[in-house]
Structure formats: C-alpha cells, structure tokens
Image (cartoon, rainbow, N blue to C red; front, side, top):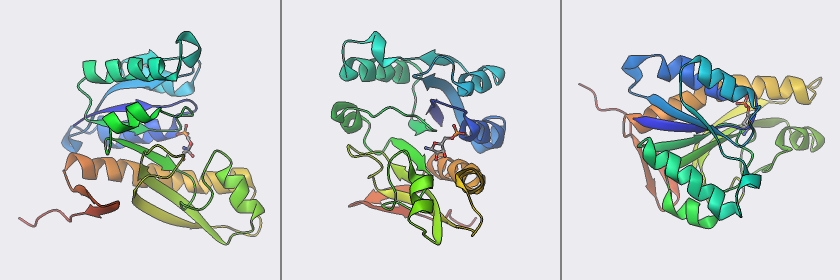
Length: 205
Ligand code: GRF
C-alpha cells in the first residue's frame, strides 16, 4: 500500500513509520512521498535520509486554502497514494479536500478524543487534572479532531508529570499504535459502519 506522510515538525511519528513499516518489505507499506507546509521541518530531513521524495506546500504561496489543498491533491494523485497519514501536520484541510478523501486521511492525536481536541491537548489535560489521558488515531473529518475513532491507548497522568514528560510517554504509545493502524489498513482490516470503525481480526490460516 502506498502512503503519503504529511508532517510539520519533528517527525518522530514519521520515523516510527519509516523504521517499522517502510524499511520492512514484509509490511506491505511504502511511504512514497512526504509533504510539509514548513520547509525547515525536521520531518523532511528524516524523509530525505530514508530516500523518500519530499514536497513543500506552503499556504502563503497560494491564493487560498483550496488552492493549497489542490496542490497537495495533485502530488497525492501523482504518487498514486492510497492512504494519507497526518503525523504532526498543523494545517487544516478545506471541506472539498476532506470530502474527496473521506476515510483515506488519518491522524494521530495526543489525547483520548473527544477530550482535549486542538493543539494544546497535553497541557489542557494536565491543567484539568485528569488522571488518564492517551492517544487517539482517527479519520479526518471537517471538524478539528472530530472524525471516527480507529484506535485509542490510555496513558496515566503521573503526579509529577509536566507537559514534556507526559508528551514523551504519549509519544511512546503513538509510535506503536500508529504503525499498527497503518498496517491494519494495508491488510484491509478496517471498515467504517455509520461512524463506527470495525477492525476485523485477520483470518486464521
Ligand atoms: C504528536 O504528538 C501527534 O500526536 C500530534 O503532533 C505530534 C507530532 O509529533 N498530532 P512528531 O512530529 O511526530 O514528533
């Protein structure tokens, strides 16, 4: 299965996907392109190191958001991408893009959605004094962090946690569950039935 990664920052999730899937021919997953909105994103460096083609699509170079989305769509079509994997991608798609790629765009988020959506999810969970937070992998819909949930992993909040320590432990889980979900896609095990995501166990031989 050919996948595209969209990343704006460090790219540790991209690295997990490279190490666990892209570099393992038995995974059936190939990262055919990495796209970023930020030319200096460290994620681009990681992709280049793994010899994965990269593209930068900066919103400011386009007349509007739809035009930037259309450029991303053009790249995705050119590489025959089957699944679009957001990994710390900080831009929001317009409804037209979301509708075109319904159930073909996934995201990883550092909270147990629908709790703590948005960019400050880790500090918001700490400020709320929640005892458990976690990681969610979900389909991307028109709203922010609102799409059908594919998988979630709980992570306890410790008494002495700060944003850095909690995010670090959340990322350990992200780096496991995100490649796992992508693998389920590659094995065609994921179905969506009226917002409920059903993961079928692989048939026994
Ligand atoms: C992750 O915590 C992810 O959940 C959120 O953005 C962060 C990206 O981290 N959407 P990285 O760039 O993959 O290291």
